[in-house]
Each structure stands twice: as C-alpha cells, then as structure tokens.
Image (cartoon, rainbow, N blue to C red):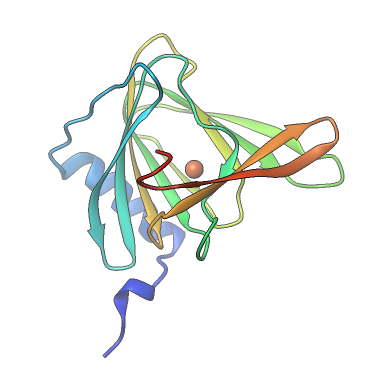
Length: 160
Ligand SMILES: [Fe+2]
C-alpha cells in the first residue's frame, strides 16, 4: 500500500487543481485589517488548498514554502481582484521579477522559488493556493543590494 500523503504533485497537476478548486469549491473568503486572511480549506492526497483574502496593500514577505519539512511547490489561482507576484531571479546579483495575476489566472511556483505576493490594487482580492506537499511552514527572506538572506521560519497555525 502506498502512502499518498508523501506524493508530490507535478506543476501541471497543481495548476489544474488550483483552477478546479477556485471554480468549484464553495469559497467563503474573509478579510482582516491586520494582514492577509488565510485558511486551509481542503486536504487531499499529497496536497492541500488554502483560501486567502487580501485587502489593498496587503502582502507577504519574500518567502519560500519550506522551513520544517520538504519545501512545497504551489499553484495560485486568482478568484477575484488582482495580485502581483514578485519572484527572486537567482544569480550573482539576484533581481526581482514582477508579474500581474488577473482573475482566472494561475501561476505555478516550484519548490525552490522565493517570492512574495501583494495586492497592489485598490480592490480586495481573493486567491486559492494549492501546495504539494502540504504547507506547514514558510521561510522568509531579506533582500537588499547585498543579496538574499534567510530571516525567519513562520509556522502554519501559529504565525499565519
Ligand atoms: Fe508563496
């Protein structure tokens, strides 16, 4: 008997699941004035889905999806509003790439990516995120002219 919880889903599967859940789950997003609102809404074989609500100006720090266990790959589907993703392009002099995500758009994030997501618009936004394996922690990073440096480990259920 195989242990499906150890399976890690491929990027195209994550993308399909994020789009499917965004369109088919009964989503009841909320918003928090303090920071983005996040809740795990589904746990499936080798993956889990989170629903996030973002007020204008809210966002994450630069982060990866590791911290305790194996880093997670992810797919992000925008349900409503617009989000901006900032992705670190590694190299001798790392840079940040910026991408806009509109409703219906799905972005994939591999297990080595360091990125941040922000609602840079004037309207609230809702997004559905699928992680494989499930997300138990995120490692945050500082980024300046000297490069990229790990900062903190933030744990699901404790820090967000
Ligand atoms: Fe992320």
